[in-house]
Length: 268
Image (cartoon, rainbow, N blue to C red):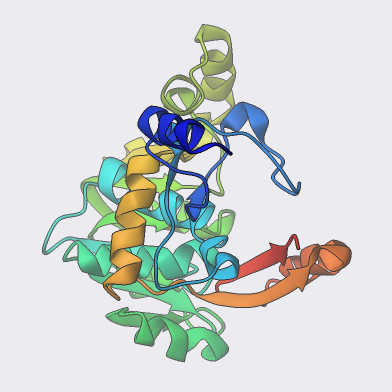
């Protein structure tokens, strides 16, 4: 590219040809298993300097989901008590570290195989979900970030204190999901209102709030993630990297539920 064109691109986008960047695609362009794609410049940020492309590829979806849930929905602050069931998974490993950076006391669940990992990432209390019922142990937390869904979500409503919030990425979307996360109108809001009636009723019974979260692409949030990674506050946890030719194996491995951290598909 001519030097003038390179300067023009940098002035227009903030990036120059050859910059190492990463981004999360827009919701209406989902489907990232491709060699090339286009994204708005405001969705991109400079990659962390301390990691390679394989590691950086595991940050965008999981890292932004955790950051936005904890900061924007649960409003975590120093001294908050936050329960994160499923802490050894892709989103959970980011959530534990970000919540600790925000000053929270973090409670999580893990199997015996995942216990050492979540403790290393900073979890203050670890409940072995294979032998213990967290509902009998966890009480009056300020917020729950549910990554599991199902029975775990229903129990989560009973461990959050009055005035607290349960945020889920594994439950049923509710009306604000349509408006706030998807930019849609009354029809989808109404459908989500009906679909999430039981979840919202369970939350109201406990004097709490229920929120389903779809993360939104954000270059500013990715830039923050890059800083947290480069200063060693957050460690991206990558379980396995699969070549693109083995993408079916990657999905099969994910479906086993044994992954600790992120599973990455390598395009090259």
